Length: 99
Image (cartoon, rainbow, N blue to C red; front, side, top):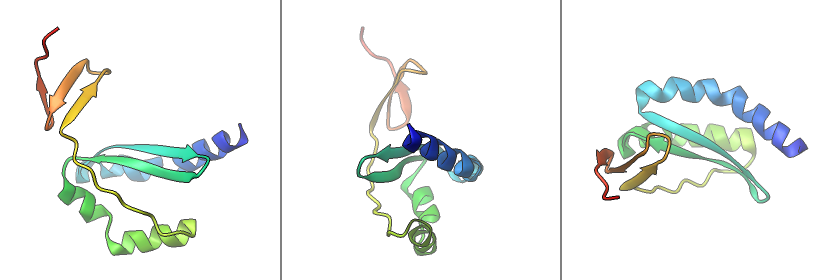
């Protein structure tokens, strides 16, 4: 439980930074916390927006803050099932699904 409290405190302390990135293309950030470490999953409006944020300077700052260089893995999201919005999107556009 103590790890959860620390993770929540760390995430909520930096959340305003990521709220501010909405105008720069950040759609969502999920903070991750597990037995092997911590991290984040970022959903951007484009690869270009993501790369504009994750510059070498930003990576150096994160390395200094956490003591380890972050490992960036890039993925494309072609299909999204969004149960909160009750929709399926292909390349960001909602589609009709046969039920």
